[in-house]
Image (tube, rainbow, N blue to C red):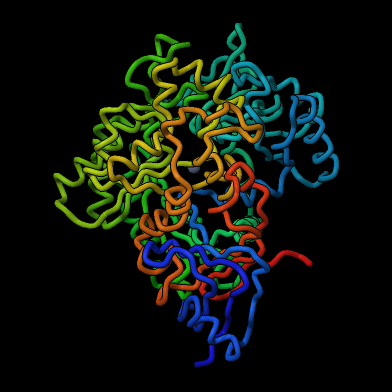
Amino acid sequence: MSVDLVLHGGVVVTGDPAAPRVRAVAVRDGVVVALDEDARALLPEAREVVDLEGGAVLPSFGDGHVHPLWGGVELAGPQVRDATSVAEVVEAVRRWTAAHPETSWVLGGPYEPTLVPGGRFDAAWLDVAVPDRPVVLQSTDHHCAWVNTEALRRAGIDATTPDPAAGEVVRRPDGTPMGTLVEWTAMDLVLRHAPRATAVERQDGLAAASRLLAAAGVTWVQEAALSPGDVEVYLAAAAAGRLAVRANIALRAEPDCWPDQRAEFVRARQAAAESSVAGEVSARTVKMFADGVVEAGTAAMLAPYDDAPHSCGLPVWSPDELAAAAVAFDADGFQLHVHAIGDAGVRSALDAVERVTAVNGPRDRRPVIAHTQVVDPTDLPRFAALGVVANVEPLWAQLDPLQLELTAPRLGPDRTAWQYPMASLVATGAVLSMGSDWPVSSFRPLDGLSVAVTRQTPAGVPAGGWLPHERIPVGTALSAYTRGVAYQAFEEDRWGAVTVGRRADLVWLGSDPTVTDPAGWPQVPVRGTWLAGRRTWRPAT
Ligand SMILES: [Zn+2]
C-alpha cells in the first residue's frame, strides 16, 4: 500500500485513550491510514517522510471562537497592541498615518484599555498626532473605541447626542464627548461613517489571518460573528485556495430586526452549502450577544457592580426576546452561539436554550455559550443538563492587569472567584471547548492552554495559580482545544484525535507538551500543520 506521508521520529499524542502515545502516523488521501509500527512499516512506500526530530504530533487545534476576518482587516491599520503607554499608541498612530497619506480614515488597534484609569481615553491625545483625519482605534476586547475629535465631528457626535441603547458615549463633566465609545451601538455611531473595507481588502485580511492561525497549529475555526454579506468573502478566499483553515461562520442576529434576518441567514447558509468549497466553509450557526464585558461595565450581572451600585450592566437583549429569537433560529435549523460574560448574561443564555428545547423538542443541537466568564454556581450543572457546550478563552483566566485593575474591582471578591470555572464545568459533565477570541487576545492555542493548566501569568503569578481549584489537567485542556471544538463543530468523528479513519489534521510541535512544563508551552515551536494531509504551515528555513 503506497501512502502520501509518514511522520515518525518522535511521539504521536493521539488524543485517543485506547492508544494515547504511538511512534508514527501514515496518511493517504488526507486520512490517517496507519499508526505506530503499522505506519513505520509503510516508510518505504511513502511519497513523503517527515522526521519529527524528537518532537510531537498532536491532533491539530480548532478555535471555537475567533474573528479571522475582523482581525485580518485590522492587521492592515496601525498596530498598537504592544504599546505600553498612551504616548506609544499615539506615536504608532502618527507614524502609520504619515506613511499612509492616501488613507481617508485611520482604523486600527487594538489598544490596551488598562493604559488609562477606567479605560477613559481622550480624543485630544490622538488629535496631537492626527488632527485632520478621523482616527478610530478599537480596544483589545473590541467592546470600546477610542476616537479623535475629527471622527466625532464627522459622526456629528456632540453634547446633545443621546447615548444609544446598550451603549455609552463617555463624556466630560460638561457633557461633551470625551473620545471613548462603549459598546457596539456607540462605536457604530462613528464606524458607520467610515469606509467599509473593500472586498479585496477583506479577502486579503482573511487570507493573512488564516495563515497566522495555521502557523499556530489551527485547522478549523468558528468565525464568531459576521453578517451574511461576509460569507462571500470566505467562499471567495477558499475558492482561490487562500484559506489555510476550514471555517464555520456564525451569523450575527440583532435585537428588534432578527425576524427580518431569518430568511437572509437561511440564504447565506445555503450559498455556502451549495458552493464548490462546501467542505471548507459553512455558515450554519447564529451568534447572539447576551451582554457586553465586565471591564466596560456592560456584562449583565444578577446583582449590581461593586463599583457602580446603580448598575447591573447592559444586556443586549431582553431575556424574553433572546429566548424568542433562539427558538426561531433553532427552528430554522441553526446552531446557537451566545456571547455571555456576566452571571445574568450566562443565565439568560441558559434560559434561552431551555426554552428552545421545551418549544422545539429534543434534537442534537449543541448550543454554545461563549466566554462563560462569571457563572453563578447554581447555574453550573445546567450546561451539561441542557447539552450546552461551554466555550472558554483560557488565556483570560489569569491575574493580569486587566483582571486586577478593571475586572476584579467591578465584580468584588465573591464574583471574582466565579470566573472561568473550567474544572467545575468539566466536573458536571459539560463539554468544554476552547478558543482565542483573536484579535481580542493571542490566537496561539499553546498560550491559552498554558493558562488553562497553570492559571498563572507569564511571570508565574500567583504561585499555585489563580483560583487553583479551577486549573484543569493537561489532557483535559488539550482535549478541549481539539476534540471539544470538533464536538462543537459536529465533527468529532472526523477530527480532534489522531486515529485510523480520521482526517489527517495534524500539528507538529517542537516538544511533547504532555511531558514539558506547561509554563513553557508558549515557547514551544509549531514546526508544521497539516489539514487533511496538506501542509498548511512550514517554518521558513
Ligand atoms: Zn468574540
